[in-house]
Amino acid sequence: MTKYCLTVTCPSKRGIVAAISTFLAEQGCNIIDSSQFDDMEMDLFFMRVGFISQEGVNQAELTERLAATAQDFGMDYAFHDENVKMKVVIMVSRFGHCLNDLLYRVKIGALPVDIVGVISNHMDYQKVVVNQDIPFHCIKVTKENKPVAEAMIMKVVEEAGAELIVLARYMQVLSDDMCRKMSGKIINIHHSFLPSFKGANPYKQAYERGVKLIGATSHYVTTDLDEGPIIEQDTVRVTHAQSASDYVSLGRDVEAQVLARAIHAHAHRRVLLNGNKTIVFPASPGSYSSERMG
Image (cartoon, rainbow, N blue to C red; front, side, top):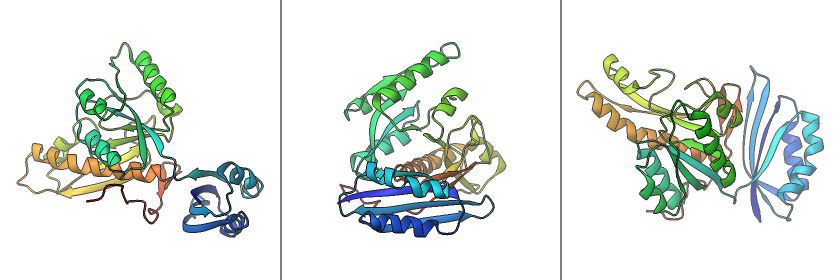
């Protein structure tokens, strides 16, 4: 029996849940978890359903057979095989804490993704990456060669079949063209609790303002710098006794955790876009278990 999930976005209308559950039952599928949200202000409905195909109906058949119902309700929908790991390319510069955290989580099976490549504008983490049998690509970026460099980056992404780009403290601003082309498929970790303290040195800004909470924000990348739909955030408490460098060290742990949680949610198809916001559904039972516990 294959486990699938169905994601749905459509105008809010009576009978959507009944139509979906009836359809799945008729296809010999058993629903094992379901989440839904009705945005009354936007008049939009969002749903994620996890289910098991008990009579062998496959993904292509499900997609085709739901088409008529989807048309009736104006659904934007997709079926996903939960046994197939999402292919991901990670991009990093010279801060490696998020990269190393993701490599470890993937190694023990705590993140359901397949890292098909790491791209950097520096050589610092080449050995770390290739020692795990992951292709490493050093692509230097300057003001003069940026269009060529981004073309090289996209070639790596496309040839690897990557469905997601993760900016694990990649310190180059992506072009508007690349952001548009990969809309909803690039996740960034920002070392600040957005929307406060934007820019290059948010920890220094936070320190100078004497904040008592610092944090990190993971969001989708858009053409508006650090303004993309937020997926995950978290904070850590600080006091007057901490220095600006303490803020940085404490912030690194939060960044790694927040980025990992955002990728986990995206890879499990739990994040649905709602304009400049996101709907993030709860994790399905068992989705946090890993192959190597302890």
